[in-house]
Image (cartoon, rainbow over all chains, first blue to last red; front, side):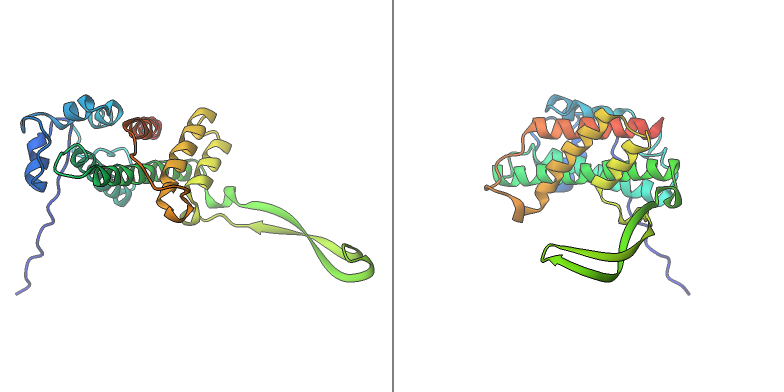
Length: 57
Length: 179
């Protein structure tokens, strides 16, 4: 019987993705609440264009 | 809301690769804001982010170029003079020859184009304005720092302004491609 191929994990970062997702994945403390939205985090850190790109998806 | 950041790109493989690259650069940029890493490593993260963002810009421009043109229309005709016989040597730098003009067709292959060429062609065919062309060229300059043998000094910190500029250009190009 053929083994079923493992499904690749697919992640989709959106403006609303929580910063905690990245903190947990890499074990890095970004100095903000893990519930903060990644889009807001990027905007506050000086990357409004990247935040807008996420928002406009 | 679409799950993909580049859902408008009709090439499914390109769309997925753009999404993977985009998500990776967001993660890298986020990590560059962590105090877990040294300033040198953070600067390296930012450099990688610039390189990946430039690759997104290049991919979107090429995708737009493919939507608007073909390899056949981009082929260039070049006249080349071919010498068939030397008649007389006037001096080491000059000679009289017999020859003919030959027309050479320089084929264009999309997969062989680099960012500079893609940017030029997009401007030439009215796909992007002169202003976007110049901005993309600046992004190319920042991206080209990946060629470390060409650097005249030890690399310092990549500024947030550099990054925000590159992102603003990527956003402009993305919105143009989406339109």
